[in-house]
Length: 260
Ligand SMILES: [Zn+2]
Image 1 (cartoon, rainbow, N blue to C red):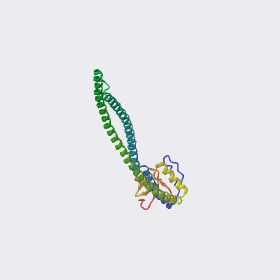
Image 2 (spheres, rainbow, N blue to C red):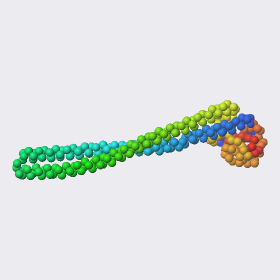
Image 3 (cartoon, rainbow, N blue to C red):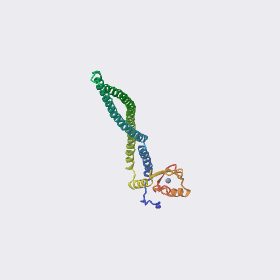
Image 4 (cartoon, protein in one colour):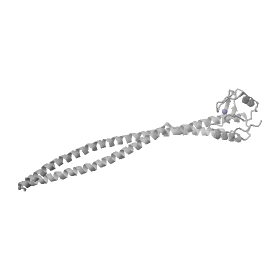
């Protein structure tokens, strides 16, 4: 009995011993395992957490840059304000020296000098207020900078720990994948080339596995129940006939509990 062409797949006419067909089920199990490991590798929760942490780290770096700029601005303002205070203080001292030295005898000049000193003292007071206010602002800015610095350290430590956990998980996956790959290679050497080619062709076309067991009238690949007509057709097929499930195109491997 020649196999009918199935769907869009062009198939080579393949016959294989029941033993070789059963080996395909082992191959399918390993391919399922390798697929599962690949999925795990791509969806490691650590990677999602690391992405979140890296976003947080970027935000913290921005906060540090802003805080540093703010501090530098305040330092410049503070420096300027302190110099202003010094200038006024120097002028007051100079005026006081002139007054103390009795250099000014003219009454009008004396009064004007005294007025100047009084006005300079008010100015000094105002400028000192400005310095104090700037110092308070600088303190708050420094606190923000310290907080951002501490958070950066925490995020950095979390990233390191998480990356180590991710690497450990990946190493474990790689180890399992290497075992499965080695086991697969051993089975592949036992499977006739034409059957293997067919299996791989189906696998790349439908995804997942290329062969599935027929159990109690059900296809183990797509979980569809086979019709009575299909089951009858399989009953009539010779044991070395490679049977395909029309629904999912996979090779259907007959097992002792196929329900035939
Ligand atoms: Zn199926």
